Length: 409
Image (cartoon, rainbow, N blue to C red; front, side, top):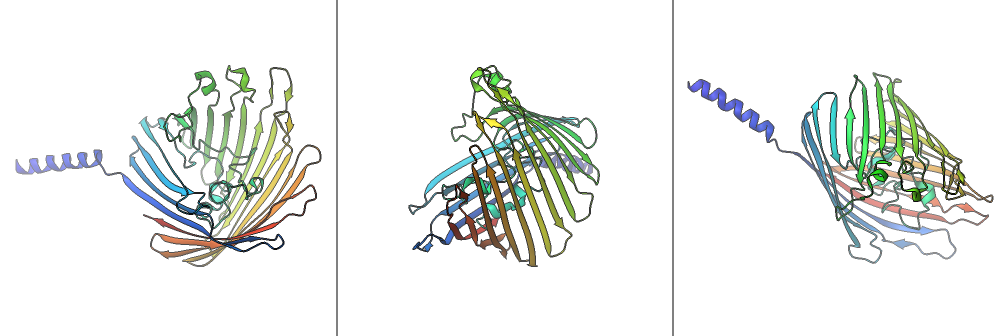
């Protein structure tokens, strides 16, 4: 009898332990600053200090294959040119999911980690945490590059550029996501927006239901075993809504393929077509075409190399020619040892538009990643860029020495 009681207690403890398992907690602390900065203008000064950035992020993941979720809470500050802590900000996002059967999964909330995006090389992971840790020029235009003194058009990545060639995923969009798994290797996502998801008030972006649904996403992925990933998607842009004042395209069509069949290499190609639309007055608006590519070499040795390129061709918006935009970035890396890695981030851009408008630019950004201790690493480097050659003007050369720490726990 005692043995049976012990077995029963053990089973109950196991069940209770599974049902009430502690969530997986984690976090990240970041501190960044500018050590020195200056430019090529005549009689300009070399400055010390300037923009400060602090961020603390906590996350909790919980659940299993049947259900669970994630919650992320972030606090920080930026824009601290006037001294002190600057402009404090906070945000929180999270989602819950339920998978009652193997073929169906439902998720509600915000997943801002880019899990659904198609870019395997050309997106956030191109420079990864370096862009958030001041080492690399930020292609998300946040505190490391979101101010007027950083020319917006030079640095934005394939994920953020208008006309980017890869499906960007849900980002900050609050949504209901229905995932269907019809066969092995294939998943289809039907994503219905329910707000912008990140407003501090939590109110989101409520609008008339048909206009809200007009911004839906459809994403289909198929994984070829040991070969690659095929991704096709549609992102609504409001044109299907009944509010005719929107004057918007029906949406964008995406297709991309990521090839990983070659050992030590990754190659991706992307294509987007922005569907044309017509205003009430009958003025025809042309669609645009975007193409992109990414390449990664990493054979496990000390040297790695990445390249990404994107081009947006044609298109009209607000009766203006969108023109042509072409840019390319490279990122070679040499691992001096396990604790010190050296990078050389560099890029070129070209933009043309109406009335013979043309602008070119470049940047060079060598930086170092150093593992200082368990969970602690710092970044430093040199960022040099040109403000852009436009209308024959003589551009300034601007430089900056960033320094930042990251700590993970």
